[in-house]
Length: 122
Image (cartoon, rainbow, N blue to C red):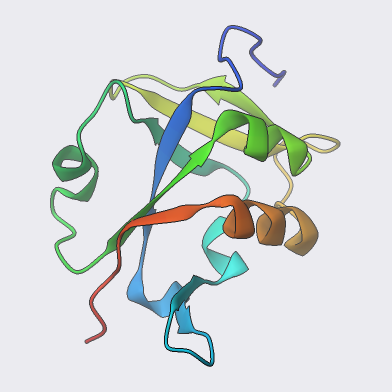
């Protein structure tokens, strides 16, 4: 696995967020837990290739965030197309693709992400 330079840093991607990864700060503002980004292969979708509804299809209670590819790279990760489905990109730990993304990298991505739709707590 290598970083795909054809995926520009300016590209923005969606990441689906389960309610289990939702926290709130002291003011009641929703905060994304870094756990939503700690995996061996992080699945994201290009915002310019799919709609919010397509990403959330079958997951009506889940939330959605967006983050730039540059922020993902700045967090120490690489990106690679993994289509189909259309617009699907996998994010991997840069120094050890296939290993779980570190908590530090996950936290950096979570801080860079912005809410599109907050998940519904059951």
